[in-house]
Image (cartoon, rainbow over all chains, first blue to last red; front, side):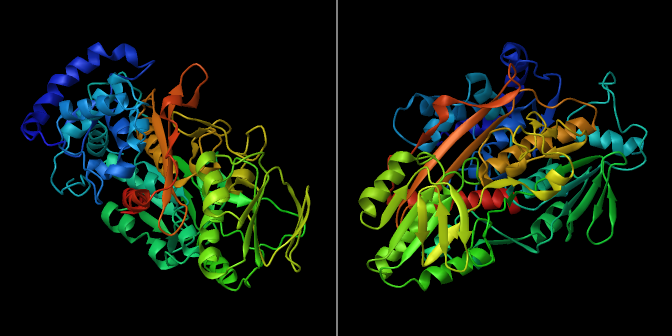
Length: 132
Length: 418
């Protein structure tokens, strides 16, 4: 995850991808409530379910994708970067824990998860719970 | 809830006021939604945290937990071979209270009144709720003759693990440690085999000639068979004896004898992990409606009980068939928290949730293995189903996995308690 230039486009990618996801991938979600949306820590609106799906990465990659250990942070990575990494891991036959985890997710789900992490700022203000 | 707080609540959930077609259950309520979470383990602590985080503090959350400190069962086997101290695995609720504004009440729930949506606490107080989330973990079933105060289980961490460590340190050279494993489902599938390995590691280094006897109620090693079989037959050859299909029938607690379907096993240290069932508040509230009567059936989209509306059960007490362990309890907690916030706003739970399980197991004081799986909601059966391609394990144990084990555990501890 070293392609820094993508991070500047992260926020833009969310808005572009959002409309795409809501239409193109609607069929991938059986009965999904696609009229709903979630707001991320950074206040960015992401498609329905994106935050919940992405939160399944938090156990290892930290709350909101901000790691507090040696495991990679995902917050602020570009959507494309996360998508290509997940696709790469899905294709791997080498035995690594994340290679198995990646295989659990469809391309549509990976796009939602990636959209979420791209929308979260990298900074340490990981909590949106003091600003109301 | 007044108009302004309702607007803020909906806005926080990403639901616009324009979505007037949605029934808003709190439109006329005068107060903020109240959610009570019972039990401060991995499931309960995570739900409480994410209910606050994801509602932008517009939901009042009370965490009811009797203990001031939670001792993690994860990594606790490392106390047995001297690689961890109990106090390194303790978590207070101060961060959840201060950083997230969760009301932490040190008590237990003595009864639930689902009609009036109130719970009675052992401290005499009565609390009202719009949604109640139960995460009490497990309780043990009785075994004839078993005195769990002397024949330890050490399966809920804390003092019992410390005492089991002391018992093992007192084993004479050429003494015997006997471990009884209950039938699945039990908490932490690799845990008992992991325990056999780290005790063997300690005995190998400190008590030459001492033995580990594993009495497994199950027909075979339930998970990571290759890894644990290699550990038992090679790493700890001549130390570990593995005996499958051995059902514990009774215990002579004074003489430290396990009476089994395969005869009697006398031990210097007898460690009995009794069969499990859902926490007592779940069963005594009429929520244990799985076919065995031991677990709570829930809708896996929200973890709401199929027996009583408004009550959700997460973690080891629920009966979805997902493994009973801390990492996936955290995963279920997020699905539950997200669903509860949607339900409070009159919306429906997300229809395609995923959960995952991952765990590292120490095999010695320098090596570890791992196991992982993901689960997806299957709308046809309305159950969580294992995604077969996601189910895998490390090829044996390694020193690099030992290091990764602590990264994994510390990350999980942080996402749950900090």
